[in-house]
Image (cartoon, rainbow, N blue to C red; front, side, top):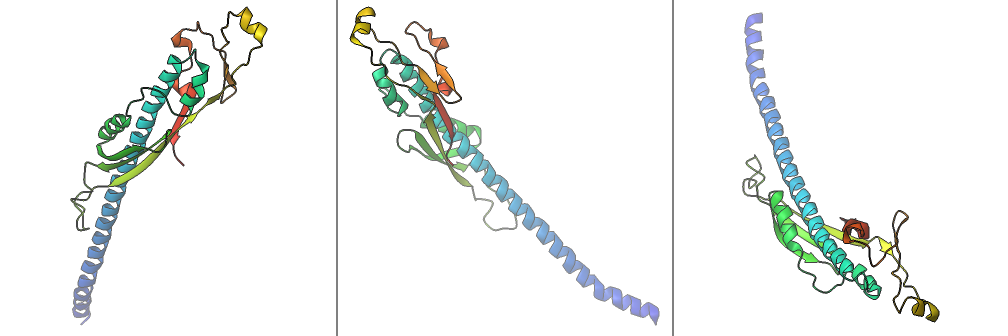
Length: 208
């Protein structure tokens, strides 16, 4: 009698065991699907961040180059620090390069004013097969914005008339007062390799 009851209890418990194991497996696959989606989204955001920073850095480098070209014309410096200069070229090609390096494609890239870029990307890979329908064809998208900020300020000197005569009419170059308490004392004869670098003149960072 005891043995028969044991067999009956075992038979009744087996379906419950199957149900519990099936539920646990479903939860495991569900967590795996969530992890796949999160990893894909993180990859998209990494690509978007890198692309936006690359576009902004390309524009920063062009502005720094324009400043060097106009070193002897301080009247143009502030316009350059504000993001304007002759001969500036599109910068979004750098965003496309960095997105591709992170296995993504740029969907849109544009300047927000003179000193910022916004980029939207899409991953090249899908989320992958999972228990969630449609993930095998779903790709992740992300957007990032990068900002260019001048690091330096200056004051245009106003020489007295007698000083203009002493220097033959040439004005001294203003000093650059930059973040971190760094001052650049500039001279027309300073070699280009000793002038401030792009990263000395401008900060580039992701927008808050």
